[in-house]
Length: 246
Ligand SMILES: [Fe+2]
Ligand SMILES: [Fe+2]
Image (tube, rainbow, N blue to C red):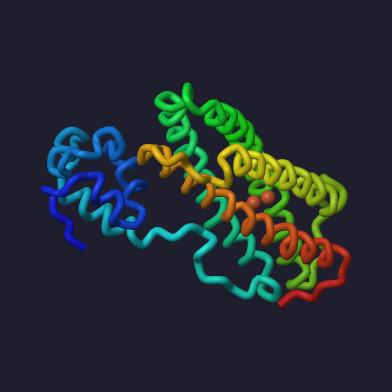
């Protein structure tokens, strides 16, 4: 990779994987200011060329949670699965919610008049952001700690803790309904964006937004799969005494 400060921001944004993510983080405009050299852009954003090159190099290795190594979650400890879900998918969702809201704000401000579907997408995404933030908080603070505590108790031969919510099926049912709602919202966004296909004349931010939304939906599917199809049924089975621990 030729990382030369004399090259334009746009060239680097196209050539280097995840460079747009790095530029957003550092406040470097790769869209309207894309024709600037990286040297100029660094001065403008008050960052050193060295720092940007380091971040670009690091960013190349960024992998969405969906692409990280698959472990055998169907048989491993539930605590490890919970750790994986929170450490990869929840971290990713939180990071992307704020990144995508900012991108949407920018793209709607510039192209909203000519593309009314963008404002509709923004509104749906705003709703799904609020829902997912509260959803993940409930998982992280109520449901997941119970599942981990139950697994510890069972594997140490202690009685299962008595949850305030009666049985684990109750919050699981609520989480599944919320997954359906988030999935439906993303499906609507996908339809509004013609399956994340930007118009031909779309600028770089527009294209980045659609690519990021597409990645977000893919990640959500994997995240929900791990919870609905593996974690929740195994937790219910364990509560019923039907699943042995490791
Ligand atoms: Fe989750
Ligand atoms: Fe969930």
